[in-house]
Length: 525
Image (tube, rainbow, N blue to C red; front, side, top):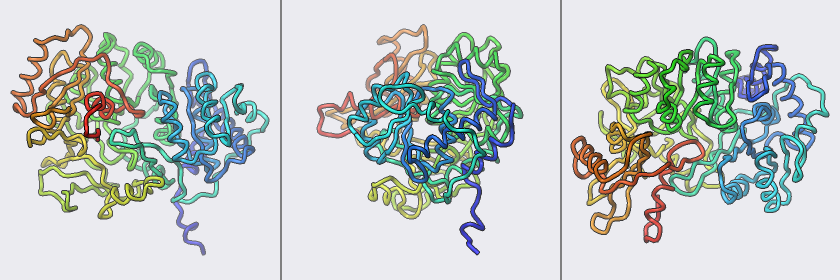
């Protein structure tokens, strides 16, 4: 008897094969002019598995992908899982230096790329890494034609590779908002467990027609198996466009979507928000960064209780806590600041700096343990040991519980502003500023100040039609002073056209802060 085989749970590759085999002619993917059935996706996946294997790629091979949203991306995600490759997505908007850093840190052997957009980047990476295999989604001048290669093979029944729960599935790099990007090593255990929690807890509609406006190479993997298991279909935008979003929802009677808060703000600010286009929508999953309670209230007033929040991080993805649709209750507006209740499938504690649980109602660092936790940071033993201190994963988020067990994320520990000896949590200031009718998006950071060490700075994107000026700045400062106190009130406010985002759609506070700290002796945390 081999206990490791006897008791091995189904992992993502097992669930992918089962899901793709469950249906045939039912639609699986809509993208541009492409409509692909489950059979189409299954067969293209098989051909791509064989193409990857023909290039010497298999269990443990490290493969990166950079692509716009196109039909081949979905089958490639499945093919990489079914060859046992370790996947690393590159963000489509990332700089060449960022990609070079990731390819080197992750020891990438092959790059799958979209030749219509990224041939130049692929060529530059090949010049930097001569042994890098290049596989393009179509004809290109710098590497192999992945699709022509795949077309040489006949589709075969899908098979699961020889992997175990601790075999690596991916190495995803953190956004770098708190320093040098770290390669988060996620074994198959993590994705399998995350999927079980999603299927057990998440409020998917009875008929799943899910619209994706985010990069497929990042977002689809998290929803791939739940959608397949429910016989649902992916509806994919080739790029985020507000009118196209509404058109697709209305035309295809979309029932659910996943959006980061900044996308939601743009959609809510459109005149089409109340024209009936959203009538078919049953669930809006949102996450990746905190959503302003004031903006969330607007959404509830427009569309009703269709919001579902998920909270996680790369090191423990998607399902640390969640807030159900019914808990998005306008009668309890204070709850709209919450991240919901912790999932019962993860152990969670709020700890102080000494690793002790904080008293009830007090803030502490959110720490978790369980099968959802990463294996560690690639080639960063010190950072891994720090993250796992006391046999907990330290998330870096400060949270507190209310008396009903709802978790409130106060802020990132490294985002806290120390001004004149007082601690200011930017999230609290952001939430107050977002209640003003003129404010569309807001980020609060600490900037250098000779007298106070740091000063509170607000960076704001106004809603359409609102005008910047001294009068508005004074109003906003007075609003924070009234609600939170003079220490929290921004000493200055910058009105900007847009706020930089990390690859996963979070406001990039490091990038915002950098412009104010450049030339000073202190580094940006």
